[in-house]
Image (cartoon, rainbow, N blue to C red; front, side):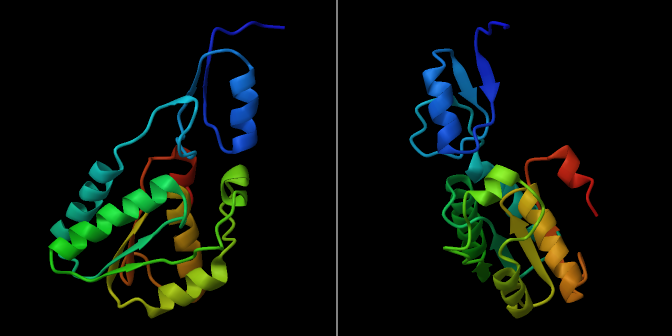
Length: 175
């Protein structure tokens, strides 16, 4: 058995965090999903990320904006709130996906590109004005949104310009 001085990990759920706490080794969580995380963690600047996303869309002369995340998840909610505030300051309307109750830990444990809330997401996407700039909380959500758009016959980027964040190399290679 190898001995480790510490661990740099992506903690996806509370059970994993509990096991790591009991390991009695230094741990750095690179995901930051858990609020009040007892582990040391690295967190991204959600406000700066959202600001860059809004400015990108504004520079491309979009006037209608939307945000799609995983409602109830800390980083996702934070990014959506800041993105919405930038749109509102610019005098633009913003539509926020409200899939509360549809998002579970399954989204994060499996991290598959399956769209577990496809019906609700489809209904929301159909109602959005076109063209629209849609910022997603991360690359996984962007891939999911693009899959639903394809199933609905919506053209990306003509009807809906989709922007994900985090540069997940594998997910960014999906078409």
